[in-house]
Length: 159
Image (cartoon, rainbow, N blue to C red; front, side, top):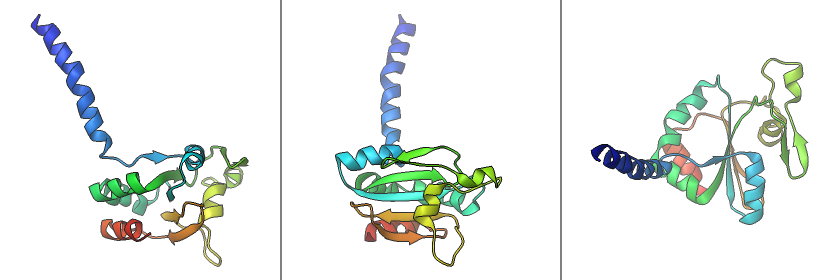
């Protein structure tokens, strides 16, 4: 009887802990989910391009993207998209297919989406790359450097 009671308590308590932890992370979505979300409810978009080897990206993942204020602000005011810039996935967005053309010729090629959205004239593509887009998907701000927690909060609070 006691063992059954313990199992029952376990099943009742574990979902509560899982739910409580949901607010501790950013609700990252991909571009296909973004397209559906924008159709349902236009909202600002925060796009974060990273790679597995980017030291500053990892540092932002450990610091800024773990900050409760940043998590709350991104989850409430933005659609947050996180994409590995070297992804080899084919992504369909707004009826077009995007893929990593460079993967065939380069070991770590950059996907078309970050090249289209985060390229700058007279500058090579660099990481980390963060874009803030308005409700109509127009670029409001671009950042191409490591952002401290304070700078990240300023960026998403200002826009």
